[in-house]
Image (cartoon, rainbow, N blue to C red; front, side):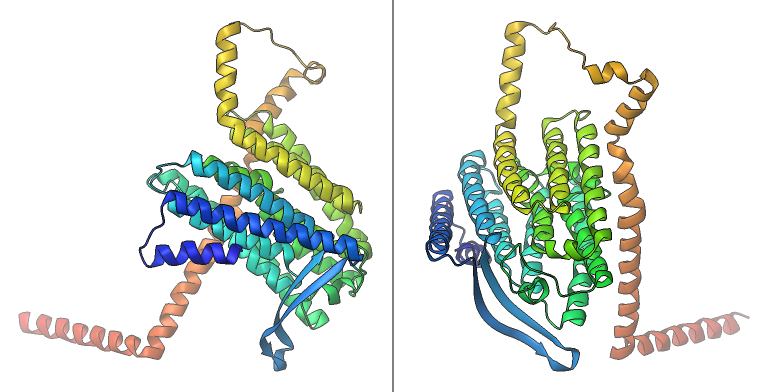
Length: 451
């Protein structure tokens, strides 16, 4: 159904036959409802038959025997993927119904729903992925649609700049994901989660790697998850992503996309059982991110950024739960938190209006309550903490200095080297050298004639 929705929206846009708002709303409603019915039907069948792992094989699409590599397209219905798929379809359907009215007569209405279809396909693909390559396809689709929706209001400079920043951080995280995928193929000969995590259904699988191998692969996947879920030190891009319209902010950074990194950690959670160092790293990262989000969220001056850092706090707690081995609690926490944040972000404009109405009715000189925590913190430390929270830990400047700029410089250099190499292969370099020699010879002759 998500693939059908993307095909309809994409082909009509490609051939310049745009659909009306009503037609796009009907297509979205139909595909999401049919997909949800199918997902619930699979869940009912699994409960009735007692089967907890249902793989769907689509075969090898690429095979390279010399390198022991094969691209295996495989989907899995289990106790992790089915609840996440149902959650995705429910929340995406809710956002679609809201956006149909919120973006009514907006010039970019069709563009929003096209990116919306890309996101839905990416989330379903990543949720049902049975191999690390299949998950990476969905992972990339989610990242692409996320960056495009941050830059939705592209007539202004700020959204485009922020979208490029988000995309750069995603690239860094995706590089770590690719390193982990390649390492898994070299270590196990395949990227199938069933081969890596054992034949037992999730979460009872036992990883088939050594402790050091699990530590390396797990750290690479932890970096990928941190980039996607805005965990420390990648939290700086989170407020920038709020440049997008409210529906995309709700579905990405309040509900689904921000939990995709956590979903990845849940999927590979058996790695934590064989590497205590990796488990400590996961708990430390989650705890640090939760504290940072709680502190920074209290100093934000706009409601969307405050809700974004509140989401970061809960995501950090979920990461700690995964590190402690509380898999089902983490899954339930994801579902409850995603539903709550979706409601809060969609209600944000109305809450501001209601609060102003209440303030005008009661008067602005309302009594201020001081917390007991504030009374116990020295004034000098209070000022430092407030400045630290207001500047969001200076993480945005650090990301710009140590990740974005080095990556841009590296790929600029690679682009220049590639251009030189292609010019050499095509003979353009020789022609350019001959032209320079002829020009030099002409200038020398002109100087001699002048003398």
